[in-house]
Image (cartoon, rainbow, N blue to C red):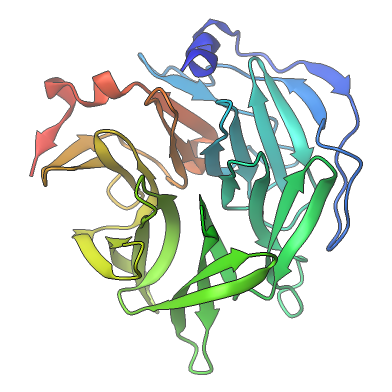
Length: 321
């Protein structure tokens, strides 16, 4: 992708270019527009070999990217869950399009130009609700709230926005559910028996790829990847993963970032599984551009690392299972 690949030439220095109308936000409120506040992109934040490493200003804490999504124009949208910001990457700039939010996490770019983000309505654990807000030409608007105890991934489909929700139960366990948000309401729910959903990716046929994890008192104990067909049937595509996080569909198959093993996996359309030991640290969201560039959010390293598919498919970086 031209925008991502041009970033190899940037110097690793943060320079403030000045505010040009920061976007405000409040539950149910709308801002004056999506222009945001622009700052220079830090460029390659650490030696990355042939990859590109991107970073944005972190605020009080280091940059902690969580969700990533490419828009139709090739723009990369990023959430910073720790600092409460949402960015749009434009050439050599990080443009702040929202700030002061409570844990913005999942992000999806819709075909109609809107961008939607999952977040909490407040920082108070006793009163906060999981919600989704969307940015259009009029600014940010609250699309829905009360969506569970936690929402990680979002995926835009022709039906609407699918979201991955966690729900706390009276016995202090958690249930996983997929919810379809259409027309500012929950139009459908699918309960999951395989685990708690983390990230979603829309497939070329209208289906969904879903990473799920299993959790007990000690934390995450494993995970799997499910595929939901357009008619609502679920298939377990792969299991025995450590802690699968970001997922994205591409021409080669389905890419998965496994936070537990630090590996980047490719589940190919004809059934093969390729494993790329990437040493990912704290892997979260994953996105693939129209040109096939693979970008993974690594909050553990305060960066987004983008690589080219021809490198990932090279024999020197993979083994087959």
